[in-house]
Length: 152
Length: 152
Image 1 (cartoon, rainbow over the protein chains, first blue to last red):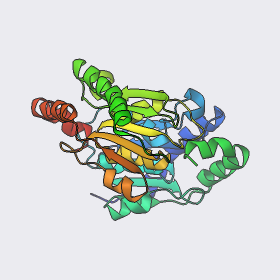
Image 2 (image 1 turned 90 degrees about the vertical axis):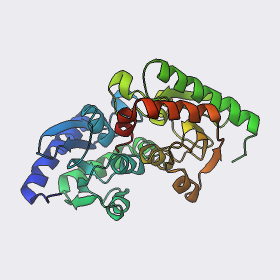
Image 3 (image 1 turned 120 degrees about the horizontal axis):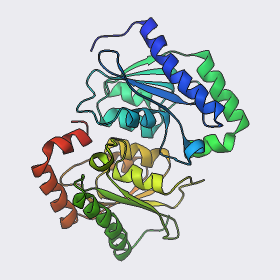
């Protein structure tokens, strides 16, 4: 798979950040995601909807994956997310052979991206201050919702 | 966590099998699941809905988890499924601290249940002939749908 340049990674992350901001405005967990195709087409985007829809299965990555609909193959795709993926979302990426992830930050939550890297997934970790600030503020304000969201 | 007797495991599996049969009758991937609470209450049940809803995120286990709605804790719960869980569903079980799985069969697909066992999840594998027959027939009839469902 071709590598992506920093500008592309940042532009794709902006889509996920827009989803996270929208989730925050709705009172939800501010994690957003987007699935991009091999040719750079946006296949699907989504955000955590635990609070908004009462749906514990709607993590950002699974929402973006769902929005992309049925795909014959995930070859060359990139899952972009504002936050390091939990085991649930890491398992999604591994099972469907999504070969790359762009991750906004892993400072507020360190999920399964090392495990994915061990299994051949390309990881681009951007250490984005806005992503981290949104999560840090949310965790301070709504710790019980955040803990529920990651089964803690 | 208390262990469960064979009769309880069989009774719980019957709920998942009923979901799988319903999925088969709808033309879908015949995998069903159910989430049971610590006191034996049925919290949620569901089936793979890739074909029916065009939703690739709706695996049996994630559908049952979704149907159970928001839960403060998964302590003492059991995820029951007709088929060994893929990485996506295995990650769900690990992330949310679901402490036990009852699995109909792992002969037609060997997913992540060994990994879950390594991480402390109690695994009850029943080697059920009806579960295996449903999958074997479906894979023979619709190999392209099955391969799509597991990202192969």
